[in-house]
Length: 192
Ligand code: IMP
Image (cartoon, rainbow, N blue to C red; front, side, top):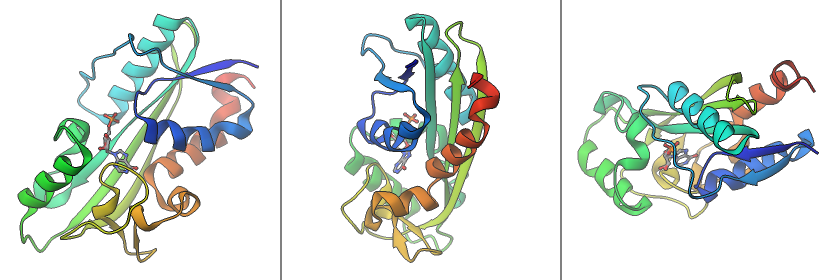
């Protein structure tokens, strides 16, 4: 079985990626913590490619990376690629976002997820992006998921991400949509 290193230290993401990738017959391995790739790109796609390529070169193995975040319309797309750096904890990131948005009437937002797969030489062989549109609530709802999930409401589902089961989140989420594209194109990029 070929090893695929998951270029993340985020356990929430790893859990979701594992559930998506089990059927493809690759053995998933978590990135060694000492390998740190700086996210210096200006887009989710550029950062996903930097991480996948950097981890593949450092380990000499296939690598997959996801760069994702929340873009809020009324905040000109913030926190965007800085979603993880918006605060120290999930709670403080949510508090900051709610404070900055205040009583703004336009609550529209989208989660974006870019995924890149690199071969052991660091060349990017597959790249996809998924988007989920929703609204930012005035206060958190639900206990599941991670990150900004409790304040991200998906009107189509009538639920926040944090109120969804993992299976339901997979149907609607940016990562679920990106993963569906990745699985569709998998053989094209990896040769099997
Ligand atoms: P990065 O992709 O590691 O730079 O981090 C993305 C950040 O965006 C995470 O730390 C979360 O705060 C947030 N994020 C990404 N995907 C999700 C999600 O599915 N639910 C909630 N928050 C998310």
